[in-house]
Length: 489
Image (cartoon, rainbow, N blue to C red; front, side):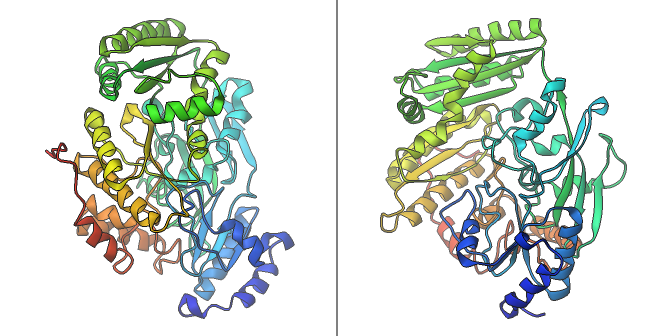
């Protein structure tokens, strides 16, 4: 079959129904509306047809048929992604893995668990917590996002400072390649000889195939956990506290910062002053390890925060008290969503030393574009999550929002950072990838992609810049102006 526009979707539907369960094929327009966007709701594209396979063999059969007919396909998990990675921008079959939710095996002796891609992130810990284990990667959407999506985007979370992102916790992948072949990448051991194709696949955003079975590393639950909440009169002081803690050789499980905008939104939603409403910034530090280790680290962090200018430091060691301090951080996006009908969440990364300057520059960009920006982020590894708040009904506002988002990412790159720390590139940021990589780098990446998918039918148009689609973005990027205080070295 030729171009995607020539696909006979009705005929494809009948062929799929011949070997898939009756409810596994979605073709009604009103039902397909469910899948017209992911967590990035600004852009919407309704797929022409969707399938919900339940095992590897069904995924293989679907992709073999797509290969035979020349049909592009897009993989989708829970749809919580924030970069438009699961959008069907051009006619393609949507392959949804949300019904693949089985825990296939648990091997406590070797600290590993094997799951299907539709298993929800938090379910992994639930499956092993009774035996004293847990799964470390914890995106903010962990009660909704799927492990398959975490693998596709190489997701992080609050605890990636100490424990790393998804790739640090995946041992083995069963993958269905774009031609329908089932293969295995990686292995049951932490170190395997040969090329690290497991590492190549993780973070490939659905452009190399679909993972159908994932073996994860699980960790022993720490003996002790403590959380500190320090509030500051300035964002610069909070940033100095982060620098001081890491400079002292301490490695917290996580360090999160919220600005005053977010603090007020959280307190308002929860109807309590969980965090001091007059604080310019609130810093959460989580420590874990042995009892004596956590006690010493807690005292050191307390002193370092106060030296940096903390007005007060709260400490929590019981599960109930720790949950209370974390409640506001975990409710931040919901709280901000109550203030504005729409938000656009970015995901840039900057060196820790640049945090105060970059946050000040974002504030100036916010004023320039006349759009409010709330900041809540993983301070320990400099992974920013600025939320641009807006009303989608306002005429022309989406262009202003996109322009502000681009300016923030340009700022991150110019201080030695990245356009993404954990949300991926998808369709949202593909036009900015060449800010970080030159033509030779991008060509090499495409060669790797073509080795897996010669016809580039897997998640077409995602991740990499496209000459036509990115022409306007490139013109716009040439006119991005950084605040005068930003000095790029």
